[in-house]
Amino acid sequence: MESLIQYFETIPVAHRTIFLVGGLTFFLLLEGGIPLFRFKSSKVKHVALNLFFTLTTLLINLAGAFLILKASDFNAANQTGLLNLFAIPLWLKVILGLLILDLIGAWLIHWIEHQVKWIWGFHVIHHTDQEIDVTSGLRHHPGESVMRLLFTALAVFISGASFGIVMLYQTTSGFFAHLTHANIKSRPWIEKIFSPIFVTPHFHKVHHHFTLPHTDRNYGNIFSIWDHLFKTAINVNSMDELTYGLDTHMKEKEKWHIPTLLKIPFQKYRSPVGSKFSD
Ligand SMILES: [Zn+2]
Image (tube, rainbow, N blue to C red; front, side, top):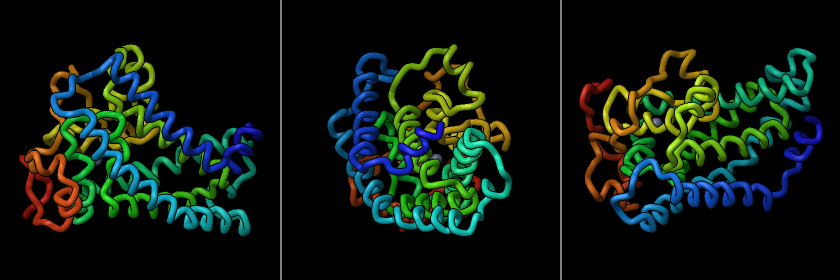
């Protein structure tokens, strides 16, 4: 465990890139072999558009990485943060660190994005994808990427996780973004065994159904336990019941056109069927 954390403490940028590109390529190949849904539109066009938003997300994360470094340095220098309150073994620190980082840095901000009207506007882009595949994982509006970055830095500050644990979390989180969005048919036994603890491909796809209440369920990133704990988990009998997208944004342009997508947060709020917000 010590050598694993040491590796992530000084992980080279080249290795992080290999993990990211390797994950994308692996799942793209897997999607060809065991697809969950057949693509109706151009896969190449879909991949190109989502990679544009993936790239902006990565650039924002790169530019803001100093915030995460500052938070972990502050905790190391002052012995602050939850994990530094007690003398606990490293393996427990790693597990608790991953759990807290996932709760605050991913689940909480995702839940907030669905509850606060102006923040929701930034998250809409992620949900306007009508064909979910591995490239949908990091399809975020730049504004949303900034919010997610700030919450990750906050999570690091509160948790007291060391830089090595944070890098392990970031790498695992990237892997799960790819795994859970990948257009792959998962086995029922895999879903049954893993979904009580981890976010599985089918568990997350339900979140991309185009109407409520499904859109407001299954917020998890790595661990599904937060959705089970906070009663935001939902199940479907069959994946064939799902239609991806958002009932308020089903026009072709809002699926494909980059300038149109970027403008969505600044447009008038649209009420979905069974809306949780008033106009
Ligand atoms: Zn969402």
